[in-house]
Length: 350
Ligand code: NAI
Ligand code: MG
Image 1 (tube, rainbow, N blue to C red):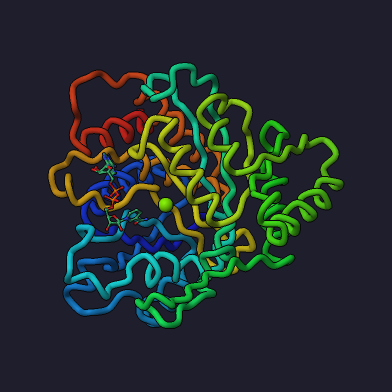
Image 2: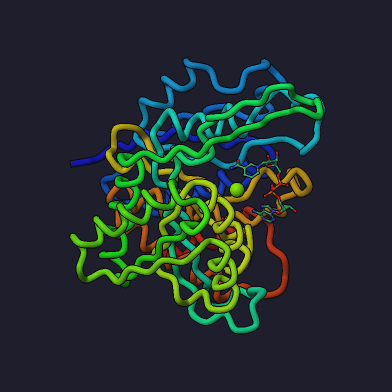
């Protein structure tokens, strides 16, 4: 029986469309000859759309996206500081809105140092871990405000929201993932100072841990975690953490594993009530846009996460292997965005 997957594609701005073209090429190659077919709908969203229409994400956009099985996103955003985009609110009004509205409570970011990739660490060891970042709570919910703004008496608050429901569900996801990997889970927080938010995280991790006696559980303060990510990143396998700490740690994780051109991510609604969204971690890179200089590998690895999420595990593994083989054989001669995509797609068709 053939399976049709309805895919919402948001190429976005800058290098977004360039890397998405390669990601789709690889996606097609990965399922060609199988009974799975991707039916894509393109959505024009981002800075370009805002400049044309003044809209960021309308209710109609959201409704239309909601009816898909999954979302593939390139990158959105214009040149930082462009005054015409002052009111566009791309980060909160588009990316965060999608994550909150589609209940993407798991932000999944694998970090692996692939053989052949030059990383910045002198002794990187065997880096292969996944950060499970909470995606719908923490200090990012917009629970704040300011009064007497701009005066010497200004008061500004941004309160972190942590619910038992929200923490428990992401912790459970992380433990399930640890069971499927090397059965090691690290909670990262700042329980010594953020005693209330830290307390609920620590308690729920301890509680769920009792159901997973075979998973080794460890706790590291976030500041210490930044040290270990540099001095011995191989101590980590699954890291579970809140929205803010996860945002920061995953940028560091991307840096120690060879950079932004390789980092993929999934914004996942594990319940399947809403489509999950897969995207490279990088932005729209206006500095190199339109020049075929962008590395599409992060977008292609996002396709591997997408396939895995859809239960297409073999196809996902094949994409990852094709990327690994391509990385291992990379020479010093620069290749265009399309050349990298073609090479990876060719390995899948071979
Ligand atoms: P950026 O990630 O776009 O670029 C940072 C640096 O990395 C630049 O020098 C760029 O050329 C380079 N780079 C990024 N992706 C690359 C790739 N695939 N291959 C080779 N080099 C790559 O971050 P930046 O400059 O802070 O932001 C640019 C725009 O992107 C802003 O409007 C920002 O808001 C937006 N942005 C969007 C994100 C998203 O759509 N999820 C995430 C981060 C930023
Ligand atoms: Mg970030």
